[in-house]
Amino acid sequence: MKGDKISAMKRQLPYHGWCFVCGNENPNSIGITMFVDDDGVLTSEFMLNKSHQGPPGHAHGGASAAVLDEVIGLVVWAACHRPAIICKITHGRNSFMKTIGLIGGMSWESSIEYYRIINETAKEKLGGLHSAKSLMVTVDFAEIEKLQHEDRWDEAGQILVKCAQNLERGGADFIVLCTNTMHKLADQITANVNIPFLHIADATAEKIVAAGMHRIGLLGTRFTMEHDFYKGRLINNYGLEVVIPNESDRAIVHRVIYEELVLGKIMEASREEYKRIMNDLLSQGAQGIILGCTEIELLIKEGDCNAPLFPTTTIHAVAAVEKSLADAPKV
Image (cartoon, rainbow, N blue to C red):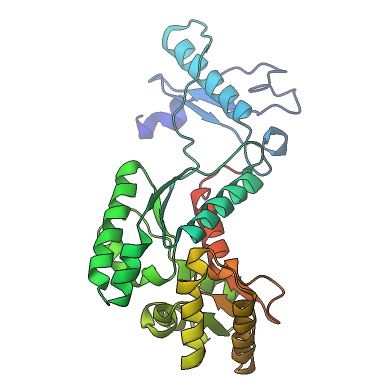
């Protein structure tokens, strides 16, 4: 286009009264207006409204296809003054839905929950037969657990970097690490891929801040409760005060995760211990509790605590869907 001549040379193409796409007499028409300039460049303007929606809040594919049909037909008309009928429209990926790249297996018990919550959320938001676009690479948790407890974090990081790179090569648009503890290695992962990383602590902290809280209790593995990678992010980036259990209670929380929950064992005695520990955090002024290990949600449910719970698996999974659909068209 020659920008300095557009306004002088653009002329509007004729409309057809009751046409669903370009008619000005049809109250449900998309109302597309098309212009052509002397260089043969075709431009169009339109605004979809609620009568053109499919799933709640999203444009109907039929309306989009009708616009595409009209525009392509008029491109042919503008080029050679012959009518054109579009007999087939093909497409690849739905550009508005990003592909979620999941690093799972730590443990697979919680990875199942990620997959379930992500797809349930996508269906809830889009309706019909919709599900989330995702890729998952899983690790052997026995290898990771050994490296964790032997303080060989760099080696564990190398494994996760390879997982993230495989997801990127596979077409993932961003990375979701399905574990709280291994976010200790988030910087190592992000330094070696070219796609975004959705941090679990950020998604959780945003919910806490939105709830108007400033002092929060934290349960998780010993690494999550004691090391600075998680607490420090909450404190430094979101201004939160973080309360953790005393040393003996931290040992209980950690043991239950590694000896029971990652093995799929749900013990009533352990639930009672967690409830006691959560009540102790509340007595220290915590306004809510972060379930800061993705397996804790298998044990602790709403009603097990007298304050709001922040279940990180659910929060992280829902945030992944929201990021995936961030570019979805609205009407």
